[in-house]
Length: 231
Image 1 (cartoon, helix red, strand yellow):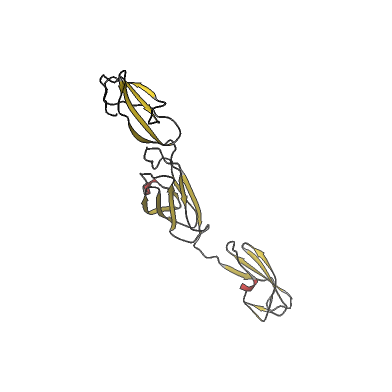
Image 2 (cartoon, rainbow, N blue to C red):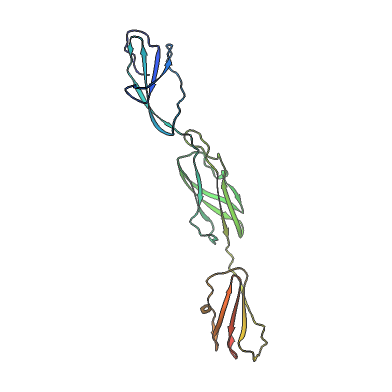
């Protein structure tokens, strides 16, 4: 509290957001050296002015800036890796909308993965997500695993990605006998899993041309001319 310069004993503590005390809240002052009060209002920084008054005069005011924070930190888990991915480990980012403390690698909940190489401070962290096997990989940062400067618990966040580091296998089959006089020759291409970007130009032929190329996912059909051979 500010210095008292009046001639009698102060009996009122005045609190205001206005250094001129045009509006203020008064609390009884019984000679103590400190007191407490409840501050309410919108979040953010507010300047609080305090002054001791008595029937005979007013003291010298003092002020302090108080930051009111009522919102828990938001949490985000993200990765630059595409989904699905064949990258291992999967690079991960853990970010908050304000500085927090208490982030530990043991906080993470994982499925088909483990967490390693956690680094960071404040609002930004990074770590590696190590898949155990092909398939869905999940990681979560539970609610309350970290806290902000006023001990508000962090919110929960989760992330999932499909990990696949096994190349698809391919087989080619035809219902036509060998040798054959059938024209055109139907050829079917089967992949062990769905693929993309397969085009007719990807099929290498000798003494033949590719016609009526069609298909999607894991099954494709290629038609060829009579007397052609294929490879």
